[in-house]
Image (tube, rainbow, N blue to C red):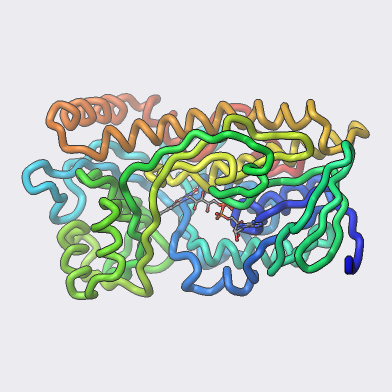
Length: 420
Ligand SMILES: Cc1cc2nc3c(=O)[nH]c(=O)nc-3n(C[C@H](O)[C@H](O)[C@H](O)COP(=O)(O)OP(=O)(O)OC[C@H]3O[C@@H](n4cnc5c(N)ncnc54)[C@H](O)[C@@H]3O)c2cc1C
C-alpha cells in the first residue's frame, strides 16, 4: 500500500558524490529536490567504504565554498601548491627512488586572472567529502534524502513522473536525474547508448603516512604499467594511486604488508622519509565510458552515469561537479522563465554545454593514458620532448595549470562562487 505522495521539482537517483553535489547546486537555484540511494548513508560514511581521495580543482572548490561544503571540510582539505610530473626509467621498468628527471612543473604562483592567489587544487579524502556534502544536504529545507530504497515503478505521463519507491512512498516529479554512477539503471531503461573500453589497468589506492612534510606538492611518475601518483593530504600524509595490470593490482591490494612496503618504497623513494601505509588498501578497475546523449524525455544524466574516465588527471568527480553547476544554471533559469524543468530546450542546452567539456576531457585523458603507460623507446622520447616543450613555454604551462584548475572558458555561476 502506497504511504504518502510527495512532489519535488527534481528527483536525483543516486546519492554519491555527484548526486549530493547536484542536490545542493539545484536547491541553491531555488528547486525542491529529493535524493534516493539504495545504500544506508551511514554505511557510505564508514572508513571502509571508499579509500579514494579526490583532487578538486580551484574553481570547483569555489563552488563547494558557495554551497557551504568547504567550511565543513576545514582541517580535512589540503592545498595543492605544485604538481611535478616525471617519467619512469626504461632500464628495469620501475621508477626506483622517488621523483626522477622532471618533465613538467606547475606552480600555483603562475596562476593569474581568474585563478590568481588560488592553489592549483585541493585534496580531500572522499569520506570527508561525503560527510560534508551529506551534512549540508541534511541542513537544507529544499532537500529530502531517502536512503535504503530504490525506484520500483515509474511512468511518465508527458508532464510528470509517477514514481513508486520500494519503501512504498510515491513521488511526483517532472524531472529525473540519473546519478547512479557507471551502471546507471535510468540510463539503461532510457536506452541511451554508451561507448566504453577498459585499460587493462587497475588503480591501487592507499593512504601513506610519511616522516617529512609534502609541502603541498603532488607527484605523478609515469611507469610502464601506468601512472603512480602521490597526492598531498592534510598532515604528513599522502594518497597513493598506483596503477598496475589487474592481477598485480589485486595482489598488491591483499598481499603481505611487508611485501607491499618493500614494493612501495622501491617506487615511492625516500624523499619524504620513512613511509607507513595506514588503513586498508583498495583496487579499482579503470575504464572509459561516454554516453551518446545526456538527456531523454524527463531525464538528464550527471557524473559517472554520463561519463567515466581514467583517474590519470583526477578529473572524474570534477567533471561531475561542473555538470551540477551547469544544470543548476539551466534549470533555475528555466523556472524563472515560467517553464517546466523538463523543458526539452533547457535539457538540450545542458547537454550542449557539457558535451564538449566532457568529451575533450575524456579524449585528453585517454591519449595521456596510452602515451604514458608504455615503454616503447620512440614514444618515451616523444613524450619527453612534448612535455619539455610545454614546460619551457610559460603561457602554455599556465594554460594547462588553469585548465586543470577548471578556470578556462565561460564559467557557470557557481564556479565563479555565485549562486545560479
Ligand atoms: C582510483 C580513482 C581515483 C580517482 N581520483 C579522482 C580525483 O582525484 N579527482 C576527481 O575529480 N575524480 C577522481 N576519481 C573519479 C571519481 O571518484 C568519480 O568520478 C566519482 O566518484 C563519481 O561519482 P558519482 O556520484 O557520479 O558516482 P558513484 O560514486 O558511483 O555514486 C553512485 C551512487 O549511486 C548509488 N546507486 C547505485 N545504484 C543505484 C540505483 N539503482 N538507484 C539509486 N542509486 C543508486 C550508489 O549507491 C552511489 O551512492 C577517481 C576514481 C578512481 C577510480
